[in-house]
Picture 1: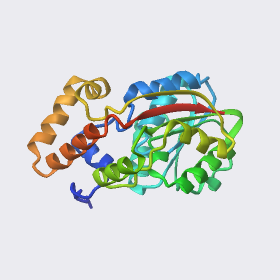
Picture 2 (picture 1 turned 120 degrees about the vertical axis):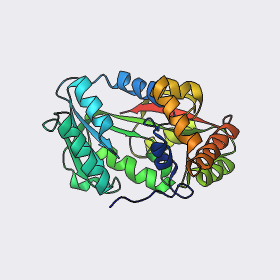
Picture 3 (picture 1 turned 135 degrees about the vertical axis):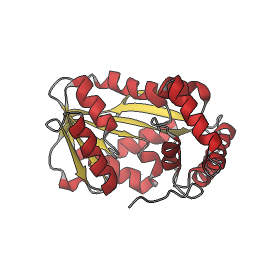
Picture 4 (picture 1 turned 45 degrees about the vertical axis):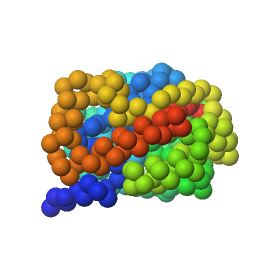
Length: 255
């Protein structure tokens, strides 16, 4: 049975996905590629991905770098879809998707060369961030790397958080550069590399770079021709533009 999405109340990432957007991270593909560069994956190494969704990232990492990936995903429908995608890609021997909660990683006893989490920690409370980061540290091998891609707040933290939360309909708790560093340190993780930049998730230029020209045209068409979808997407876009001086993205690599 297919559930009809309520565009006015659904989380922002679900609304954008319904419009056809596939890259939903604040720094786009370029920021994720920076993480991959810092990681320097080697064939045969192991990766734990938090919130694996439909498995697209796991498939890309396994294919490109010949590593083994374990993905954790809470939503059972997403788990089923991810497993279908992995089977279709012929990567069932290298990718495992586990249905589970990122707050309860104890079910996974293995330690990994890398843990990757993109656009996950921003949506957690301060206590939630600490708990997840501690679990990440526990699941890294000695000298393992934690790769993170999150939302950054520069000024007006309280106003920005409230505004974003109203717009995307989920808790948004981005941190400053120093706060991200402190949160990692509290779990015994030290940032070795970091980069920040503009949050351009719904800007035309970044959409073309992330999705390609034809896909961007399709997304715009979907938004403009769906009278239920259009106001919500435009609302998010206006909100991101209003906050553009105060928000951005941050990618970092910890050990």
